[in-house]
Amino acid sequence: MFCDLNLNAAHLQSDKAELAATIETLRKFGYGVAALNTVVSNKAALAKLASDPEIRRKRDSLAPEVSQAAPSSEFRIIKRLTIILNDSSLQLSAGALSSAFDVLAVAPTTEKAFQHAVLHSEVDIISLDLGTKLPFYIKKTTVNTAIQRGIYFELCYAQSIRDATARKNAIANMQQYVRATGGKNLVISSDAIKALDVRSPHDVANVARVVFGVPDRYAREAARAACRAVLFHAATRRDTMKGLVSAEPVSVLSDAVKWKLGDAPTEEEMNADFVAFGADASDMDE
Image (cartoon, rainbow, N blue to C red; front, side):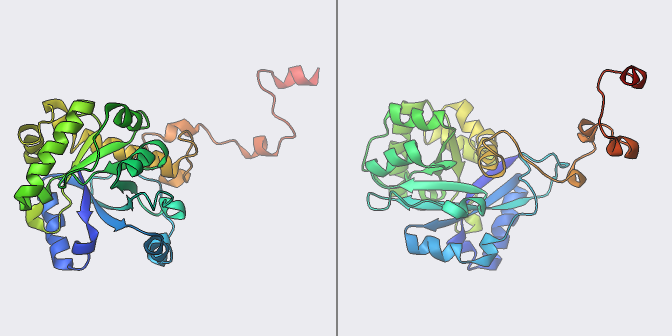
C-alpha cells in the first residue's frame, strides 16, 4: 500500500474539482491512502479548529492498523494536523485535537524548536521545510533521538518540482539528513496543491535516490513501508492504551479472528453461584 501523507488542504479543499482530480490521480498511480494536511501556526488557529463540530466528531471505529475488523481495499482519505513551531510557540500542541486527526506532525523553524520537537512532541512526523535554507544543522545525535521515539522525518517534493531554488536547497538539506541518518525514518510526500504535482511511487523513489541522494533501500521504503510505520505509530498513539490494549465491538471482528473469543458460556454457567476449574462436580460435593 502506497501513501501520500501530505496533500495541501488549504488549497485543495477550496477547489473541490481539483481535489477530486488529485485523488483520482493518486488512485491511478496505485496509492491507497492520502492525508489532507491542515497547517496551523498559533493558538487562535488551534482554538478555531477545536470549535469545529465536524472535526471534533467522534470516530466510529479504530484505525485499520490496530483494528481486528476485516481489511478493506477501499481508498482512504485521512486527516493530518501540522503545527508550525518557533521559539515563541514551543508550548503549542494538539491537545484534545490529537484524537480528531489521524496523523500529527510538527514543522519546526528554528534549532530550539527542532530540539523541542525531537525531545518532547507527541507526534508522528517532523516536517522540515527542505525547500528553504535551514537555519540550523541536522545533527546525528538529535535525529537519532527522534528515530528511537518512532518519529519519522518528511521530505516533500512538489515544491522542488515547481521551483529551481527550492530544488537546490532541498538537495543540500537532504545531503545533511542522509549524512546524519543514512536515510532511515524518511517519508516522502507531495505537499500537492494540484493534480499535476503528484508523481507515481516509483518516480518518487527514483527522485529520492537520484536527485536527493537517499540510499536505494530507504528511497523505496519512503512511500510505502515508512508510511505504513507512520500510520501504525499514529494509530497506536491514538487508539490504544499505552500502546498495549484497544477495545472494539465483537460485531466488527473478522471471521479470521473470531476463534479467539472462545465458546460463549451457557445460561446455566452464567447463573451458577461459582465456577470450579479443574475439578468434577462430584469432587466438589465431597
